[in-house]
Image (tube, rainbow, N blue to C red; front, side):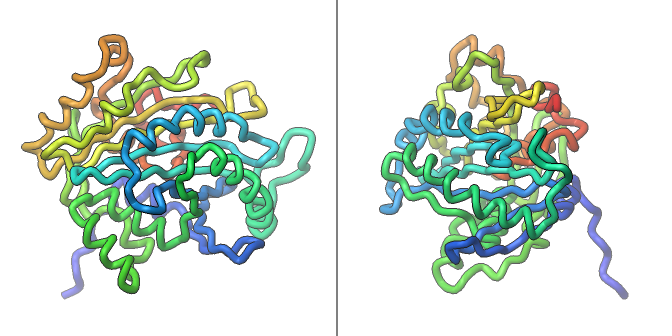
Length: 319
């Protein structure tokens, strides 16, 4: 009897619709890339070389990182970006920047889209200069480009926070052996107030960023403070080229996500906005009936949200 084929989930469709590439740049450094059509996304990990970075230290860099993001744009072939800061129940924290490069023709520069080999060479050329700017604003933190294996492991943990310790242990003793097909969740269920995936349940909120704001009015330290019973918390800032094809990235939106171990913990996760100011709470919208796609938009992968029909209006791209 042949094994029963598992139903294809929205996360599986989205993630396996992307091709994971393992490339080597001009300096011999391995670079993992997620490719979808003309879009190529590179992830950059930001962490303390002594593994002691506090959430406060990471959030203190957000304004400088946001300014750095807004120096990137079409000239660098950057079409979008995201910046995620995450904390776990054990107090550990990390940050990931996602940079999406486009092979589409640049107005007045290119006559046709670049082929893959040309695009990979372009990314290699631009990435070193782009990362120099990030390192300057990282206040002594270590900035490293994620390999293809890093991306697999990162996504696997994102859908099942309970295995984070096992994954990190395996990475330090020969590797996880996970492949890209192992990264999406095997189980998904979504409801108005939560999104269940593998052995975790998430609740997400979204906020649109106004054009005159350098950062959304969120108290990042309060939003990310570890809470007993909450497996992880993540805040993701999203940047896009403006609707008028401006030359550089602009702040676009924000996703806040809290993970718990089961449906009985959803009420605990839903307390996250309560410590924010009244004005922030009024702008931070629960992703009602779009919990699954909002969770995906908040992953540190800079996913292109136009393809997600049910993403809340706050995160719909206009170009």
